[in-house]
Image (cartoon, rainbow, N blue to C red):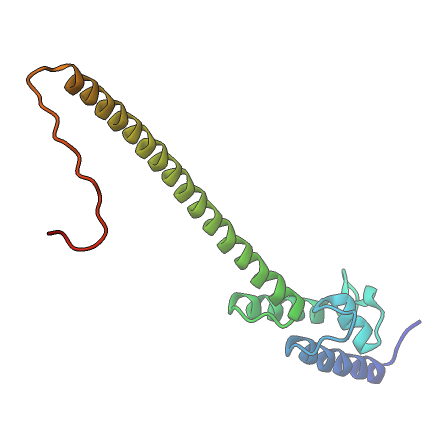
Length: 152
């Protein structure tokens, strides 16, 4: 079915108005910032935006403006902005996990080394005690009884 030039102009006006709304972030419930939603909001058949159809130039304009917004870091679709934000958070969390895993590994190594040193020191103390017990030239000092109160 052919449409008149006036109907075509009205359709283009509705498409441009819907395009401006979508690109400002006024996304209808259940919609996205895409051609499908643009066609639905303008009440135009979606196939009219493809190939050599009458509104293909408007699809190209919409995609160009949308890409310019994305390049500028402005995401009109709140879900896309949320997805981008969540991807950044996931990456941040991954980096934190990597750093924490590295710290845990370092602390585990440090703990193992400290336990090893303590065990070696304990063995050395026991060896020196045995050696001191066996040596005749070393005299052991008497141990003092612990008293309660001031010393006289």
